[in-house]
Structure formats: structure tokens, C-alpha cells
Image (cartoon, rainbow, N blue to C red; front, side, top):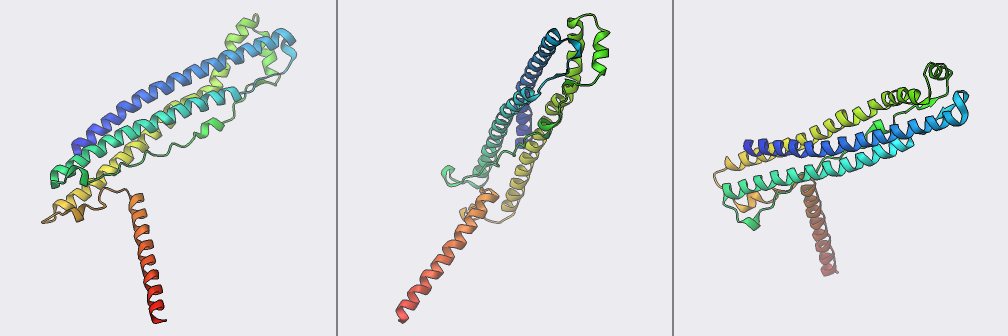
Length: 246
């Protein structure tokens, strides 16, 4: 089990490296596209109205791009988790089959579900992209022409939005990967405990293995079905007894 855990953790890291690389590329492309559009909007505004007009730029476009990039990341991360968890499940199932000489079709082991990936709070963070105060007019007049101003202002926009990009790229991706690792480690730990318990028995039968491979959710459903079946049988039995007595 230690070998299976180590190999699957390495597999998970490799999968997330690919997923993260795709995500980072989309973030960078979205960020650059937004910076280009915002700067172009500013230049157009200056050319039309000069430096006395108040300029605003809606950051909704950036949020849409980042949300789209995150949705792709979420799907890819979910697939990476499922792929790794299924591999771990198959490897551990093979261990059960070999250890207890179980026929291949007689034992099923459920894979743990991929962890939920919540939408990042960062996407709701305020992005202030406007020159509504008087400082920008004084600042702009120290520049020589719109092109010089645009280059400098692009850096201001970048500085305003960089924390959101970095938060998504570093903090959020890292937390998703850690959750996936913990799910995998908890699954392996639970199977290790079961295997050790079965190995300690003098004899292990198919009855002992019944339900071992089911997840907690499946076991809860099985228990509920058994209780419902018992209640129904009791009800039918009581009804028949009353009918016979009548």
C-alpha cells in the first residue's frame, strides 16, 4: 500500500502540473487581453475628450475571462483527480484479489469522489479601474504624449489586477491540489486499516468482504434500504396476521 500511495501521489502531482500549466497560460492570455483593451480604451478617451474628462473602465470583461479560465481548470482538475483515484482503486482492488484469492468478478471497490472545487472568492474582489480623481490629470501632464502615458498606465492596471491573478494561480490551485492529496491519502489509510483487520482474522470469507469495497455513501444507502426492507416485511407480516385473525 505504501508503494501504491507513493506512486499515485506522484501521478497526481504530474497530472496537476499539466492542469496548472494550462490554467496559467489561460490566465496570462486573459490578463494581457484585458490590459490591451483597457489601455486602448484610455487612449481613445484621451484622444476624444482630452485629459480633463473622467475615464472609467468596466472590469467585468476580466472577470468573465478569469471565470472561464477557472471553469476549465476546475473540469481539468476534477478529471485529474478521478483518473488518479481510479488508478489507486484498481491497484488496491488487485491487492484484495491476490491477498484473499477472490474471483475477479466477485469483489468491487469504489473509488473516492473527487473533492469539490469551490469558486474562488477572488473573482468577486473589487477592481478599481478609473481615473476619477484629480491626481491622474496632473500625473498625465508630466508625460509626453498619449503613448508614453499608455505604457505607464498599463503598469498601473497590471499592478491593480496582479494580486487576483497571483491568488488564483498560486493560492487557489495549491489548495485544490492539497485537498486532492488528502482525499487520496485518507482513502489509502482506510483501506490499509481494513486490510490489516482482515489479515488478522484466522479465516476470511466472501461474507467478510461484503461491503468492504463500498464507500461510506453507498454503505449508508445500503443500510437505509435494509431498514426499509425490514420495515416493509414487518408491515406485510402484521397485515397478514390481522387478516388471518379476522
